[in-house]
Amino acid sequence: MVEAKGLKVVVIGGGSSYTPELIEGFIVHHDRFPVTDLWLVDIPEGEHKLRIVGQLAQRMVEKNKAFLPQFFAAQTV
Image (cartoon, rainbow, N blue to C red; front, side, top):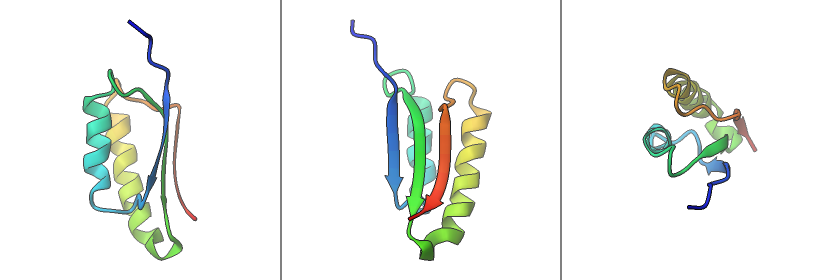
């Protein structure tokens, strides 16, 4: 069996209401989809939603000790 390397994931439109569901998928399937870096990005107009969703995603990640990316960020572009 080939050892999986960590994956870097960028979510374009990270302020979307679908993002928490995506994060949940990363948590549930971390053994097959080993995310090491997670970026949530959105346009400046979506900054407010990105901040809210980003904080929720951060709490989800922190609550689940099995899935802890080395790097997590939420920013506008």
